[in-house]
Length: 526
Image (cartoon, rainbow, N blue to C red):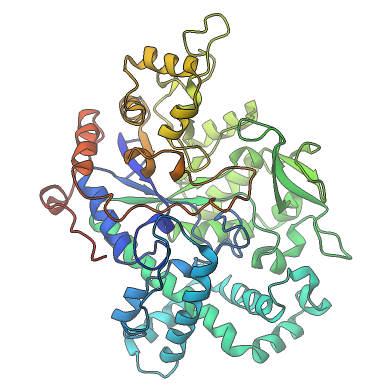
């Protein structure tokens, strides 16, 4: 489904799905959610980055830009494969409203390693054939061993950052790597096999989505984490100190809507000139890999390709950074040539945007993003009407845009409304001609009837949840970030029918498979 059709979708990260195992996973709960989305007339499921999260649990700071998060592997599907037993996956009393990431990791990794040990006994021929095909896949082979060895060596060094390892390991010397693979062969293989399990189960999710006429929108952060297999195995592409291997400058954004001191992300910055010499091969492989797992990619921090905020390493905030020139249009020309044809990319073009960002986005036909929560600042000349220069009012949104009520970095719409000033509330009520009693549905309807071809609504807004369901507070490392989970009963009742009324009323209904229209999604087992 190209993004030039009038369609709608839902934003929900798999970790937020309900279930008894402490974290949403890509097993039966994901399949059930897809059935629900299809019954609601939705054409897209948008997720956050699917990688293995590092400290802070952010999907935008992963140990690998290519690997999947093993914590999303479904224990139930491992039982169906015969790798585990029902008794072995009986979970402890995990909280249901939040993900306790540390607890989940300590419980699930032993199960994944037990599954790998059983598999190694050679009694699973069908699974073995799929595992062999997985390892030979060119979209996997270029990163799998680097990731598995990186994680193995982190375990061997008590989780310490790779810059503290022995010099030959730190500097990625082939002889030292070969010796480490041999020394830690069992742990190394367990990380490889866990990636296969994720890939195998995610392929099932993709097949289910395809059968229901739903496409998955993925997310590619522009930067990778410093403490990651990507930086460690590709040091020549990053601005690192030759003696310490630490970054010389790091990524962030200047003070903005989200943070008065800016956002200090801390990611190492690319040597774009070095990457350009081989036609951006590293990026080509990365994009090809992600496009083998999703249909469309939201490219996070799109403006960073034109110009990026460089902060001196060690600064406590992002306030003293400088703008520097990025790869520019040449990067996207290379991607188009290397990947072939038009690129299925959504440009995250929020924040301090310059004319060159708009030009590249328009030249390549990438849809940009519009957030309706940003639209209700008051006008300078009349405090009773919304600011006509905001650029986010529904009438200012054109067809080649993706309109959102809010994003993972925003409060939920109800949470935003409860914290908004009375002037902002008045602007929304007067512009939309509503009473504001159900502000989340007011913005959902505004998104659905806008000119934008694609309307995406966070699941929290469909459910009318408040600030307690917020996914992330940018610029903070709070314990509640990235941890919200949906209630197991949330998909019951009339919510799907209610959504479907609007998808069809505003001409966003797609041709659904017969079973998706006639048959409601089955209730989950939990």
